[in-house]
Length: 143
Image (cartoon, rainbow, N blue to C red; front, side, top):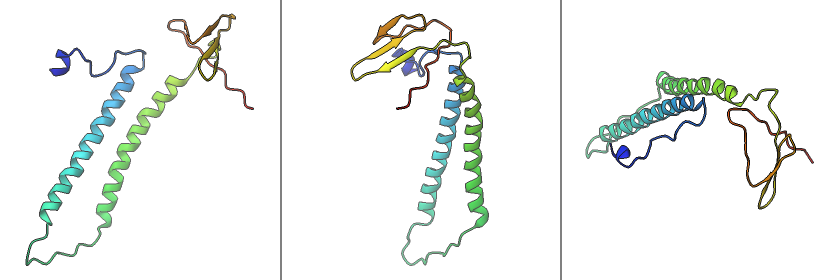
């Protein structure tokens, strides 16, 4: 395979325990969009050829079909709802921060970041975090 010869992975290495689940969601959405897009383009080409203007042939008047309109509205709705039903629990699970997670204060300035850890250690333009431990950033102060 070309990508293997170039040593370019299709996806970056997993950096979290949730990465594989996000990758499966990504591939599901990609497959649905690809199949739907190919279906639309195939139908467009077929209908363009079938109903192209021919000399001496009067075009047929086509009236709407409520059944057809309902079908092509409900099927995409079901796919979008499946994407939603898959992604919302995953998002909620990955964004929950444990209550005992330490707060790290970060202030963004025009050309720098100022960081202060709970133990008083300060950093500028670098952030060192403990491995496999959750941290939180407090809500910004409203002015």
